[in-house]
Image (cartoon, rainbow, N blue to C red; front, top):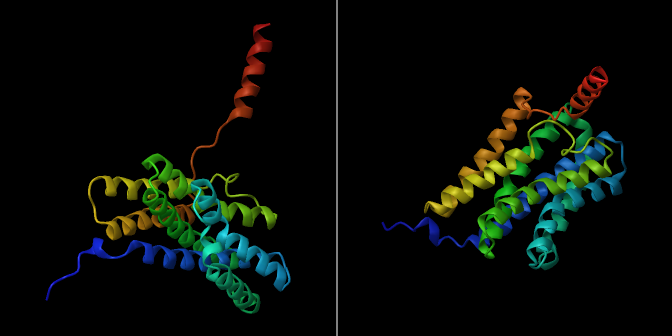
Amino acid sequence: MPTIPIDSVDIFRLLPFVDVLAAIVFAVSGALVASRKGMDVIGFMWLAVLTGIGGGTMRDLILDVPVFWVENPVHVSVCLVTAVVMHFIAPLVESRYTMLLWFDAFGLALVTIAGTVKALDVGSPPVVAIAMGAVTGSFGGIIRDTLGHVPSILLRHEIYVTASVLGACAYVSLSAFGAERLPAMGAGFLVTFGVRGLAIRFGWSLPAFRGSVTRGRWRTDKRDAE
């Protein structure tokens, strides 16, 4: 029986599915923040929608392409449904913060690759595509954390955006070397989710800038010199 080449799969049919799945996953993470803050159902909807579509919206605006959820409102609809469902089942989840981290890691990996692929498909250079992957992956979480009054992912030392960048780099690199698209997407997803998952599991973080310590030492050395 003849096999169908992987590259014959219409990626433009696959990406909307990835966007919808990512919107649901990020909507869950937004709803869990709303749960931890004791919000009402409208608060759940607000955070779920903004978290679910925030990264993709910023990506499309930067790339100057039609915003995905304006063309297909199903993304907003699934976020709203997810928010309502989570409003009733979130109290049943015992470890909501841990669950939030893992849902966020899964969503990060999904939208990172979707953003990178979309940027390349509209003709963006590889570096821009990698940046779009990171923007798509992180912006929804930034909105969620800001509105939920929790420390932003950009202000924490843990590995987050780095995982997104590494996953986007993996996809772009494999594509440049002629890898088929779906395996390259899978590899990029695994890199992003794997790095972020290991950071959650083992508390990995990048070295923090010690500016205040350095300035303090500089002032002490200056006084000693005087």
